[in-house]
Structure formats: C-alpha cells, structure tokens
Image 1 (cartoon, rainbow over the protein chains, first blue to last red):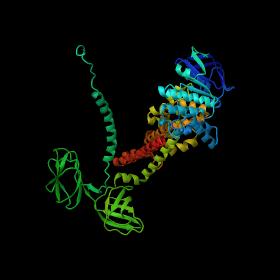
Image 2: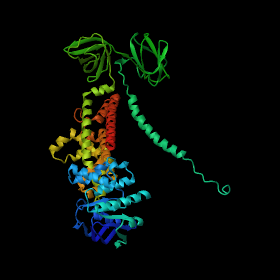
Image 3: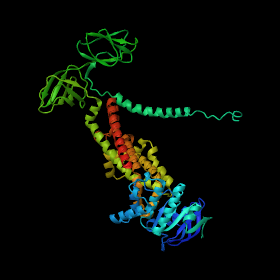
Image 4: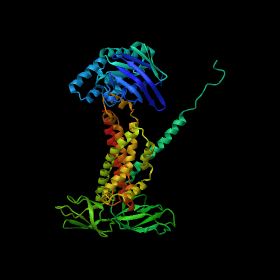
Length: 213
Length: 419
C-alpha cells in the first residue's frame, strides 16, 4: 500500500505541492506525465532518496516519512538500472539479504527462487557488462525484490527496450506481480504500456497527481 | 536533371587536419621518448681505464702540427677537443675517442685551425707497479698519478679469488691507493684496475644507498597518508553540497599552483609556531621529508579521487540505500569497489610526485647525507660536486623506481578491475 498525503517537494526552483496518491496493497499503479513534471521526484520521495518539505508518506500501513531508505521496505529500479558493475548477478541478487545477515543457505535458496521467477538462472555468474538490456532489467528487478519489499518502484523500466523485448518484459512484470503480490508503482511514457499493465492509472500534470480509473 | 544547375557539393580533404593532429601529438611523444632514451644512452655502461696526467698542454696556441712525446708501448687514451682534427700516430690519423698503444715515441696533434687554443686530451693508462698487503689492507702503487678519491670504487681483475671485484678505496695518495682485501685472500702479484661504471659506483655508495632507502620508504608513507586523506576529501567534495565549498575547492588546489620552494618555506615558518618538541622531531629530520612530500602529493591524490567519485553516478548509492545500506555500507560495498582503479591511479600519481619532490625537501628537511638525503637531493649533490655521471646514475635509479611502480600499479590495477 502506498499513501502520499499533502506531499510537498522542493528541488532548486522546482516545487511540487499537495501531492496526493493512494494505491491499495497488491495493486499495480502506473504513473504517467510529461517529461520534467516531477514523476521521478515523487518516486524518489517514496523511496526516501529525497527529503519531503511537508506531508506524510505511508508504505504498507506504516508512516515512513522520516525513515531512511533502508528501513522503508521498498524495492527501487531506476531508469538506468544501476547494476553494481563490480558484482556478478548472484551477488547483486544476494546483496539485500547479505546486509540483513541472513544465513548462507537462506540466501542461496532465495537467489535460486528469484532467478527462476525472472528466468535468469543461467546468468547467475555473469558480470553486468555481459548482460543484454532485457537481461539487465531482469537482474535489476530481482535485486529490488530480494528482500521482499512491500512496494516496488519502477522508473521507466521498459523505455530502453525494443518492441519485441518490450512485450516480453510486460509479460514478465505481470507474472512477477501475480506471483509476489507486491504493490507496484510504475512510471512510464507509453500509454500502451499503461493500458496493458495498470490496474490503476495516475496522471501527473501541473504539479498534481490525479487518479483516473 | 542533375547535370545542370549547381556543381555537386564537395568537402575539403581530412588529410591536413589528421596530419596536423599527428604532427602535434607525435612531436611531443617523440620528445618524451627521446628524453628518457637520452639518459639511458648517454651513460657509458662499460668500465673505464684509470688514466694518469694530461700529456698535451691544453690552452696553448698551436701554429701547426703539435708534436707530443709519449712512451712507446704504453696505452694512451685520446679525446679530441673542438679545435682538433685528430692525432697523427704512426702514419694513421686517429679521430674520435679511443685508446691506442703507442707505436713510436713521438706523435703529433693535428689542429683544425691554427692560432686557436688546444683542447684535446691525451692521457696514459696507469698500470700497477707494486702490490703490498698489510693487515688485510692492500696498497697499490701506480706508475702514474691515478686521480681517484677516497670513497670511490675500483674494480680489480686478473688477481684471483678474494681480489677480483669492486672495492671501496679507503685511502689514497698521488700514486697510491688502498682498499680492504677479504680475509684469506691469497697474495696477488699481477692485477688490472678499472673504474666501474657510474651506476655501479652509485649503487655501491653508502650515501646513495641510504637515499634510495629513504626515498622508497618516505614515498610509500606519503602515498598511504595521501590516500588516507584523499579518499574522504574526494568523496565529500564529489557527493555533498555545502556552504563554502568553492572556497575549500580553491584551498585544495593551492599546493598544486604554489611554487614548490614556497611550500617548503611555508612549512618551515609554520613550524616556528608549533611546540618545540614537535619541531625538534620534524624539522631537518626524516619526518620533514614525508611532510614536504605529502603536502604536494596529496593535492594530486585528492584531485584524482574526486574525479573518480564524480564519474561514479549517485544512483548506485541510492539503490544500495533502498536495499538496506546505510551511507557507510553503501560507500564500502558499492562505491569503493568501483573506485579501485582511481585509487590505484591516485596512489601511483602521489608516489611519483613524492619521488620527484625536491624544492620543499631542500628547504624544510635540508640535504644532510645519511639523514634527509632523498634521490633528488643526491642528484643535486652529485651535480654540485661536478659529477654529471653520478647525477645521471641517480636519475636512472629514479627512472627505474618510477617505472617499476608504474608497471606494478598498472598490472595490479588491471587485474583487480577485470578479474
């Protein structure tokens, strides 16, 4: 569940006020809007990467407004994916679990599970530089899902992919959503993508977020 | 249709541009390579003979061919000056640097022009006339003045076990020289002497041995200190915005733009204001060497680290934060592994800068042999003493040290990055 109440954000001269957004647990929300309207800024605020000037953020029924990103229970997939270049795929998937001091066998099992879910079992020992765009996207998703977050934030996850892969990844996102039941907030430019995936549409314009069913 | 109207558009050739790039870049590369090669080529790596007094009276005006008296059967070394064509010996003309065995008693020097001073050199090779050993010290008597000094090295050949090899001269007079013979060496009646090449001389010299050690240790210390400081400063300057940042940025560049000598002088003056015990420990002692190197080398390391962190997008940290890292963990687990190449580059740069540091050390630490003498100081002292070859030998040691560190850093760096 994501609930933004009266969120105010400031970044230099760019200001957003009174942002309201509500997404029920397990829903798939798509946020659309023109370039530069502040979609990514809102996403970063949800992840705790940007301080809010006012308002409250609730994730999974908890008020997380002042919590550091690590304690919010979010998975974040940025637009450029930002796979850690010095780690092989297996290490990236295990990253969140190692930080949580999980025992070796639990980590290994979870990594296998994720790899199977995302269809990247054969890529586990690859370095990120040897992954194609679609493969990298799968790994970034897996990394963000590893610690079983309540909320998954995707920033234009499919924008850099070609037509065919695009369709494939849409299917994958649906699959992941069905299997894990995670609440997803997905930023995109593409109306067809929104049509295909969204259970719930949000449109951002003039510093406001509006929900249209 | 296209036959009529405007002629087809033509673009000028790329050749002049590309040639220009090649010439400008190439000439610099050529100078770099030539500069290093010149050092390597200039140094004579062979042993050289021990020569006696000058036979030609230099500085006199030669009206014509100048007769020179030599001893038949002796070996002479001839070096023409800029005013001579060569040497007329036994019907042949000797040109250029060379040794020859005199076949007659009289030879003549051929001037290139008349009424200009003679600058050529002709010296006889000395031979050992007697060898005496007293209490493990060999004293050789030469038939001519040898011109060697106490503390220099000679190489002995043809004398057998214990004798052959390089020895340090412990005492000299005009025609005698002494050195220590290893215990149990048999008496030798015939031996040849030569001067080992300057590189051997330098490496055998205890002062220079000390300065090599001090240089290696101080540069390594400086590098570690520099990285210790450069990593946090570089990270803060790359990631955080705060008031006064431009000022701090300027401050960080001061050691780079300040004349090195001034850095040393400023340190020296600064240490007038610190407690006595501290300045007693540092000034004109080895810690001053490290501090002087550190002040300059660290500025370069900071710059390198800052650029390194600038090139690592902040996204990585942000993702790491959402995955459960705090800032410290994100830094050590995600950022530093990516900064490894930059860290090695910064370390190499700091090390190389520290190795070449001279001005600040001279002012702040002095140039005391066996105390604060580092390799650039040695080179300077050699030059001051008029021993160009010694200076060159020290320079070669520095080139070798820098090259080794560079190659090790490169290969080690590559391995770490691509493994």
